[in-house]
Length: 282
Image (cartoon, rainbow, N blue to C red; front, side):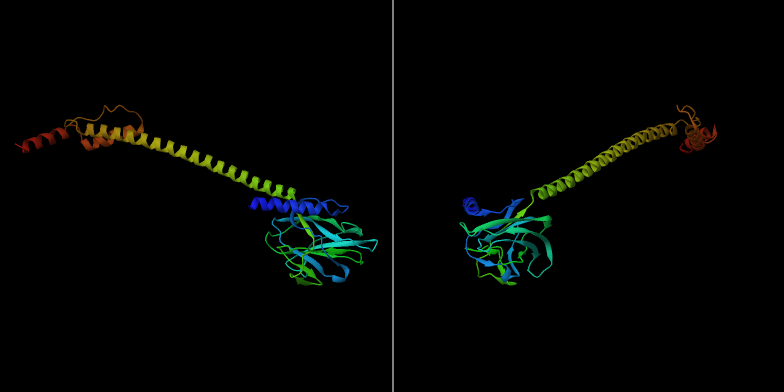
């Protein structure tokens, strides 16, 4: 049901847009908020400050459409569009101006004029913003109604008028900006992936080093156990025998040989000690 409702709203918006006279400047970007109208209007000059609130759904704003009512006053005027945050008295976030010709007072008695901002405006989705329109001559009237825009209210002479039909407008966001944001996110993702890969490599190297250290430790332990077994075997030699047949070379072996021989005592002492021990047991 929701999908059907969206399709119906899109068809209605398209039908209304096709029934209007499109201004000389074409829209740039993708429509975000829309309230295309076909009702009455207020002369902008005598109702300033005049504006329309809107609630963006995306984070960028690059332009707006204003729906003007047909006028019997000929000529053109400089139309200025300001964007403000929350209310019409707040500081201007973006502004743009251009000459706009009189909207002809012939069917369909309205015109859509597009205004691009010099650079994309960053907005907060879900917050309230105001489109303010300023003129210098009594030529242009801002069309409103029928129906209400759910994301804001019209402002007449600086006062919110939520009980009245809202003004006609559309806001546009930039696909290029969204692409830049996407590319930035992709870049962050690639950076995180590279960092993860580096960390994984370091971890793998540390693990390999730990494995090598463990292998060396095991080898040392085996060698130490083998040496200990040999020493124990030699310590059980018959009394008086010297330890001189250990098959190794080097300073460490010489020190070990000397230490074991000191434990065994001078040649012959071990033999007499063994005899005394045997005599004592008789």
